Length: 305
Image (cartoon, rainbow, N blue to C red; front, side):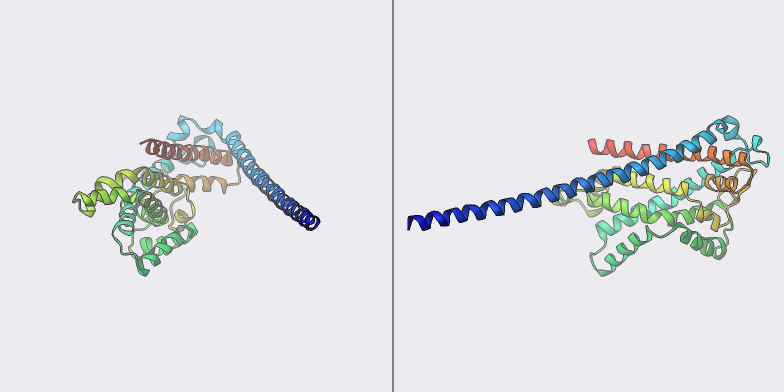
């Protein structure tokens, strides 16, 4: 009996040892795969950053000597030494201003309705899915839509307002999604506490939900406007001019924008115009980086409150 019990105990210990060894082997394999995946991701990220840095360096080397006061205050010209981005820069400001006036109220109000007022049924779910899908639609599709509806059907022509309406369609899904996520992140206990004190739904939204969600909403708005500034395809589709020696004075005037001007210069065979395009890219990147820096600052300030 004693010998049998001892043998059984040895077998149990041996079985436990084998099982423990298998578990350790599996853990080591998982750790190896995890480290390998981490290094692959780090390598791919480093490669992408390196390629981006090389591109930015090439643009900066070609264009930095053209960026001066004359470049910013001169109209386009067929002579490279006299050419500038004044009309394109002012046109971009007009375009972004009217795009913001149209897209921001519409996008934020739509997000408020979908999150706070709309019944959670199949129709609401269908609308939300399609908004998410629209955020991934290529910008050229919005350009074709703007050409068909705003330029031709409504007869707005190649005006600032036609470009702004087209760009508003482009960035509306981004603003709605960002605003919805910011509103959704507000704790529900805040709403319930306000309701318990007798506040109406609009008072809850206005006094509690929107102030808490404002940093996220503003961040999404700035990122959406940053996308609008850098888009070229929709503006080409609606017929934005490539050579403008005047400044727009009303929303119905024709215009050009920085991406269009850069595209025009890169299409020319002379090397000097390519350097001018690099200078325009530097100005455009500076504006985009400033806008994104503002978004980061707003997010940082909002997270500390």
